[in-house]
Image 1 (cartoon, helix red, strand yellow):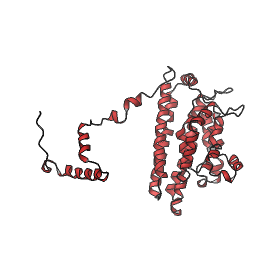
Image 2: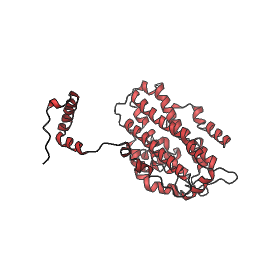
Image 3: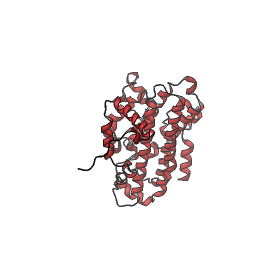
Image 4: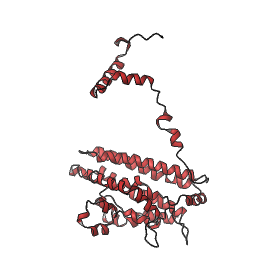
Length: 330
């Protein structure tokens, strides 16, 4: 048998190692665990490598084009990047929602992170738009039907985590339901603004894009809306001292969030739609059958998270200047 190493003594370890062992002993003892067993497992464990930790090979294998048209892979990668940014946003929304005793500093910090994520997406959108040839896009897009960015459930979750549900629902439909439906999420989700964005313009019927989206996500979105009733950003802010609710730094972050999610981000999509799809007199339809001309421009949808923070003129002209500029450039 091979010689066994001599038992180690405290003198064999530096004071720093002994201090860490003491901390580990306290941690595992608190859970009734034997530190020696965990240390033995560490002996057999491999070092962590970058490519294993971020699952690089798996990540790079997730692009599966439907066609052989080269620029389709650009389209896929950019949308995958977008969904990862959305996940980063949702991690911040989750932590905001869990604040039982929020502080101005922490709320502003996390809102600032969300705004930076959206600003990165907004600033990078031209990477995709300028990175694809129009003719290639118009070819491979036909293989994607009825898929549409409209079906991004994480974007819907961001909206529901940002504001009270009433700000996302059609006012006339909500009033028709009456006070009894104020907390009936099944009915309120039925009034959500985005349902008007995937309808067949000629008949008003739901497009297959919307039908498939509802089939997969309706129950999940209802639960998400219920969860964020008291955890959405505006609800959390109401738990701050009243004077802090009007703090300029907080108001600035909230207005930026409102503009980023409800004006700047959808209008980047509108800009690309004008470039790729709008060709008078006959426009190219969107892959999901969405009526994009009336769905994307914020001056038509007028979804606003925090109407209390905008002037009457700003509310009346919501997104109008940006749309006019895009149309001039298109």
